[in-house]
Image (cartoon, rainbow, N blue to C red; front, side):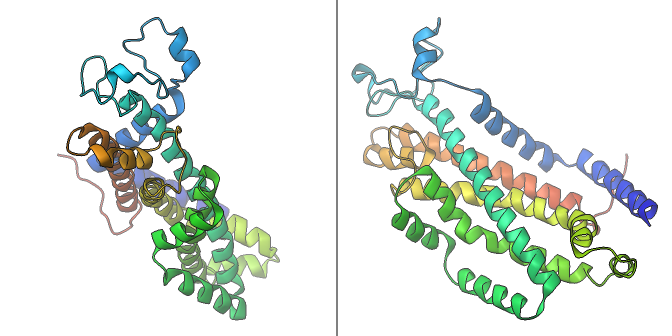
Length: 303
């Protein structure tokens, strides 16, 4: 049985790699996501680095204020211009990417873990516990996600941690529904019944036989949810419920640029473009992964 499962997984992996190889959307999405993630993780432009920099005309601090350069348009010295306090917009967008990626990964990780556990238990146990969980899911789905996040973030107070909690409070229901549906479909298949007949424990069946075979839709869902989480975080920050100034985030940069939309268009245009490209990258990556793992998609033919 193990040999057959290993062969089936190798065959699926070979098929997926063949599809990915000719998928231009996956390549485009991966490049955008890698650029944003690498920028958020590896680029550090704090005040200490700025003061020690040998070439300050290239490296700017996101917190360094200069009244003489306030609301300067894009130039060679400030490629994306400066804001109303003379801070470099490019540096603040780079630091804002760190906030967006951090919130996205932590919120998706937290909601994915909670939703996976609840979905597996609801699908595997069934009965009244399944009915109870699904009624909670139905109630939460009745509320618009951003409205619920605004209510929770407003109650808890504006901070980065509270934004993650607020966004996770609704996002887990998607993972729970997907996981429950897959567990219900899989728990009656032949090799699960064979494992039960051989005396395998419930935990072994769940972790060794069920979870590895339903990981693919969860990965695809998590990839696509990242874009939604980033937009929601930007919305909360725009309303003043996210990270507070002077911390840079794309949402509060859009909010600060509202007052100068006609005279300093770059204050809102470039953070909005960063949000657009990042969300598009994650959506392209999620769509491409969904196509790659879809058994109905045929292998690309060589010409």
